[in-house]
Amino acid sequence: MSEQEDLEQRLARIAGATDALRPSAGFGARVMAAIDHAPPPSFLETTWLSARRLLPVAALAAAMAVVWAVQVDGTVDDELATSYSSIEYASLELE
Amino acid sequence: MDTLEKAVDRVLSGDRSAFQQIVDATSQKLVRLGARIMGNQADAEDVVQEAYVKAYRALSAGEFDRRSSTNTWLYRIVVNGAIDAKRTQKRRAEASDEQIDPGWDGAARAEARLALSELDDWLQALPPEQRAALVLQSMEGLNNTEIAQVMGVSEGAVEQRLVRARASLRQKREQS
Image (cartoon, rainbow over all chains, first blue to last red; front, top):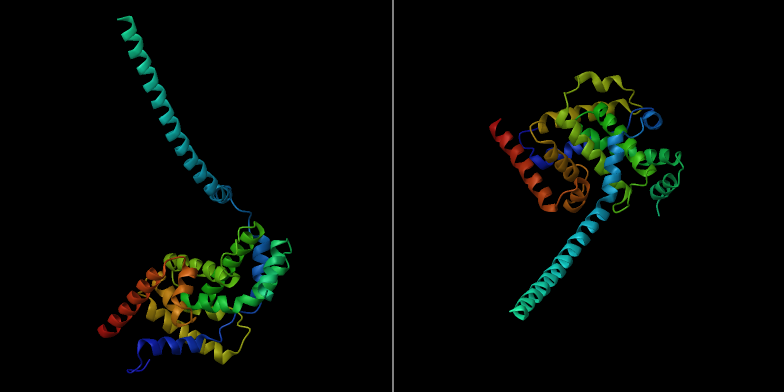
């Protein structure tokens, strides 16, 4: 590196010097052999991948559960209010 | 559809031998990228080999959703693998690259080895994410949008990494 060479020039020079890089002899064959001998995915990997696929379904189910809970809560409130009114009405009648 | 995408289609339909075509079409670019991040060819070949195994598994399991191009997807696997390896790396002995059979021109190889060694020493102090972003932009010629896709971060995060990387290198130069 010369005194005058700035950062970008140095990066460009090194990029040029490494442009001709290529895999060593037999690299492709080693890759295919590694693929053939790679152990099957572990239980944890399989579980994680399956869980990741189910994530959108789980999110949708959770959203639907919240909507259902809010609706049911409203219905229960209405029913409670109705029943309290009935009790009050019945009490008045008894009096 | 280009040859690479056709080869991916064949692997997706269960033709294992088509993966060899993917390796042949992409290994030079990926090993060069890996070497520029790792700082030597031997480590780069380990990272790229592991990346191909992961890619093959993903293709076989139908996990490649094609939201990005095959090239971008492979770049992403290699960059992530190289960043992980760089974090945990104990530097290899200087002689490690001499032990592999180059299979290409000796003079150009010697020049490339020297340049990689210079690059590795120069970028040694940078965190692996900044180093990878700088290599992708200044040596691989990717723009910030492409780097963001490869690294799986926002363009703002890419810009921040590049600014910090350059600031660190300038500061290092001023101190020396």
